[in-house]
Picture 1 (cartoon, rainbow over the protein chains, first blue to last red):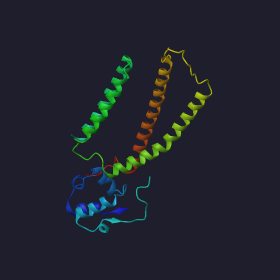
Picture 2: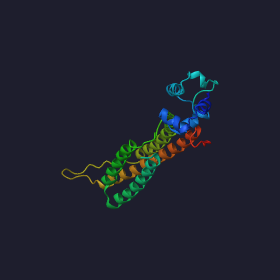
Picture 3: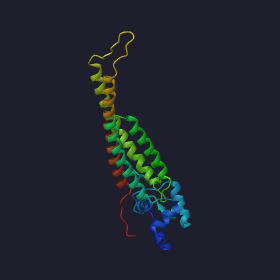
Picture 4: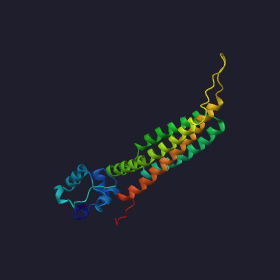
Length: 70
Length: 152
């Protein structure tokens, strides 16, 4: 799944560490999501959208790939 | 406590446990390593609660889940193969039931040694399980973005 977290972070000048702390996850998880290595759960996706105060579909874009395939 | 300090303490604990295992063997005192292992596990769980940064989140849970599934997928096969071999060995020789004369206790040392050998085999299988789990964990951690560098 593609996402625009990096863009939203850059617009608000928020570091990965600050976002991770705000969401209660590790910074490594934020890096993995931004790079498309990990698809967040629905719950975390909503929390990210709430954090940036935008709709969820403004951040995440479905590219049709299965999530977190082993 | 910082996360790296926690991981360092786990390593130190493991080394101490190896030392205690050696001492328990020298002293022929099984309860020593059993007690120490239990205390170590409880201490690690207690210490984990004092870590300030999140040690686990949903991504690490996904990594753990995939690694555990893959480990189990191989481990049950190895365990079954080893057990089947042992069953054949056990049943292809006389079972060795000795009925002592009335009033006399059966000699235990031989059976006791068998228990010890079973423990070595179990420990070997557990070692294999840990190696498999560690390997799969590294694989899935890479797969789901651990050790990814970033410009920040």
